[in-house]
Each structure stands twice: as structure tokens, then as C-alpha cells.
Image 1 (cartoon, rainbow, N blue to C red):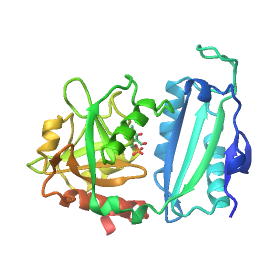
Image 2 (image 1 turned 90 degrees about the horizontal axis):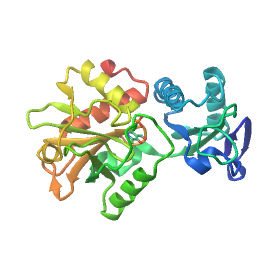
Image 3 (image 1 turned 120 degrees about the vertical axis):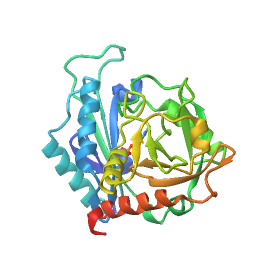
Image 4 (image 1 turned 180 degrees about the vertical axis):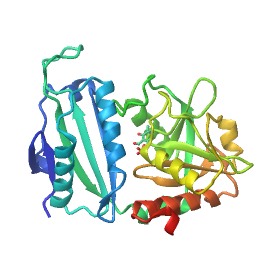
Length: 288
Ligand code: PLP
């Protein structure tokens, strides 16, 4: 089956999609992106992902390349053409093409690129077995709430994690508190059973999965709090996990050299994962 990409108004074979060498995304990482998972033929939480795209664009003063309605039509068309029933859709909007000059140019048309990827998420062993994370200093900028394509520190963090045999790197601020992973939000369950995740300030990306999990936690009557937690607190936690559009709820069983809980995925993490996957499959969490 042919695989297509959407590039600035055209559906083109994936391998033939190209952008201009003076696209500001290529030269300055001057752009933003979104990743939306597709489970069972449905996009999960498309609306909040597109809301966040709008916010990232407006924070960066980049014009919207398409209206919401047209964007949704293109997304559906690309998913259909590529026959994706399990996987993801990736979209990237950059400020556009202009002669290389640091300051933002005026009157340029934003560029948009959209691709899809087939991934059999639900059979991934990390969901059932859990993963290891390492902790590293957070060296990023002060607007981590913007989902920019400027991801070099995140790439460095992920590479460090990979080289240490870990799945993710939990970044740590100057006060010794965990901010978030390189591509996921960080959570713990304290010794007294409280779910904790860092508040969504400018220090972290306001994960769409994170927001859905907070809603589910409230619906299920779980005790939770949005507050920073230290590496020390994480290492003595009963459970830990990460959340993102492509890792859903992935249990964390080891942080650096410290085994979490009994070394296996925690009970509450497993429940949240189940509730969240039911939600992704279109099942009302209250009607399980
Ligand atoms: N934090 C960072 C730095 C990310 O890159 C991501 C996802 O890519 C997340 C958190 C999780 O966000 P979401 O749940 O919207 O995928």
C-alpha cells in the first residue's frame, strides 16, 4: 500500500515529500508540532491536541496554516489513504520560507507537513513489563509548555537514556525536582497512595494524556495532587509511571539504580493504564 504525506496542500508519496532549504523549520527549528495516537480506527483526544497546536502557534506568533475544519479533513484523508487503524498522525507547522535571518519575517505563509505511521501500540511489552528511567539535569529553556520542534535537549536526553539501557530520562530542575521526561510526563504514587504529577506551568508540556488521566483520576475518586516532587521522593515512591500520546500509561519499575516498589508495575498504574486504554477504545470509563 502506498504511503502518503501531506505537504503544503498536496498529498505526495511519503519518500518524495520535500520542503524548501530556507524553510525556517529546517534552519531555526522555528515551528511547532503535534502527535495524535490512532487506536481502533479512532484518533484519541484529537480536539485537545489541536487546541494545543493552536496555542503553540499563537505563543510563537505563527499563523494557522489551515482552518480547524480543513485541518481535520486533511487528517482524516491522510489516515484513510494510508490505511492506518493503529498508529499515529504527526503534524508540523513552521513559520515558512524566508531568506535566512534570525528575526521573524513578516508576511510569510506557514508550512505544514503531515505524516502517519502504523504502530501496534497495544502489544508493546513496555506497557505490561514497565521501563527503567534515568535522571539528568533539565537543560531546556523556560517555555517547555510550547510544543516546539526545537528538540535537541530532548534528543540528547533520550540518547543518554538509551545508552544507559533506559526508556526515558526524567529531567530535574535546580531544586532537585523532576520536571518531565524527554517525551512524556512523569508521575509517582506516594507511599500513602497519592497520585502526584508536576503542575502544568511553563516548566513542562501540558500533556494531553496527562490531562485525560487527571480527569479519569477525578472520576474514579482517586487521591491526587499536582505538585513538584523530588528525585528522592520518586525513588521512595510506591509506584511511578510516564504518560504520553504514544506511551499511554507506561509503568516505571526502576529510577537510576533504585528499584521502585517490588520491581514490577504498580497496581494503581495498571488500573490507570486499563481505564485510559478503555477510554482510548471509546469505552466510557464509568461503563467498564
Ligand atoms: N512532555 C514532553 C516533553 C513531550 O514531548 C510529550 C509528548 O510528546 C509529553 C510530555 C506528553 O504529552 P502528550 O500526552 O500530549 O503526548
